[in-house]
Length: 167
Image (tube, rainbow, N blue to C red):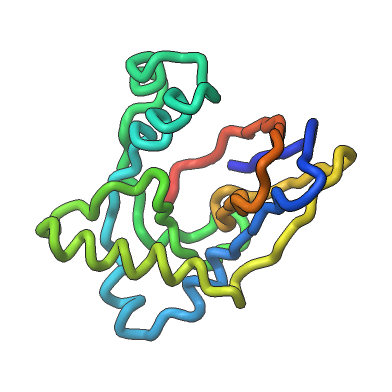
């Protein structure tokens, strides 16, 4: 799955996007941590981020419509990219809710570690937008985050290309 992001309106200052490599996040894990995570699966649910988007007025659909169209799914925490065949970390603090089969405390501790781990500066690049910018990303192996350092409106249009079943 990939996305194309196009800047429509950008603030005069700030509003950059951080892109992080989930390949680099995986490669930096210790061998024991890789062994622990390999084979574990996590639930991904859009409910929390959709609720925030609805509250902020950025999403026009109802929560029920969104949940019907995008129900929770289970994906491996460590997945293999279908083209590169490289392993990568596949969790995201916006949608990953828990690890299947683990007690809540263990699931939360592992996910909290991974959410912090993927923020490591060495895994990231900062992209500064202007109104002619286009960004292409492979959502299977990259995460992105809007740096909240602006107070003017920032509008990006997004096209998401359907992907594959993670393995």
